[in-house]
Length: 114
Image 1 (cartoon, rainbow, N blue to C red):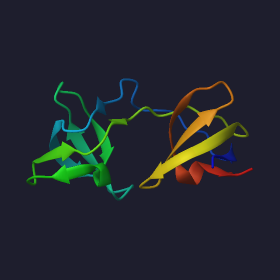
Image 2 (image 1 turned 120 degrees about the vertical axis):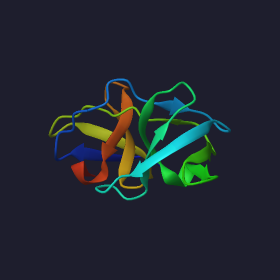
Image 3 (image 1 turned 90 degrees about the vertical axis):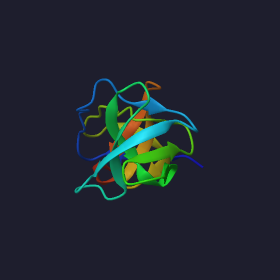
């Protein structure tokens, strides 16, 4: 059941053109994120590069993996005090929806239960 949360620390996306991929897509695997364990840098079949949760990728080799499900890396810009609804969490990031119906990822530590 979705829970309402309040933004404690504003978040601004650093990635205006997020990656997307679907189940079965072959991904090139890059480095792992030092700040957020469980996230790896990938390159999609279209050649776009971005961060993805390792738990939704079956690693074939150190340099290649297969997407297990659909994923999009859209981050949501937020402001302090804003209400958001927690939809799901992956590796320290939460997919939320704001009161305007916009959705995206924010760092878990940036929100708190309302």
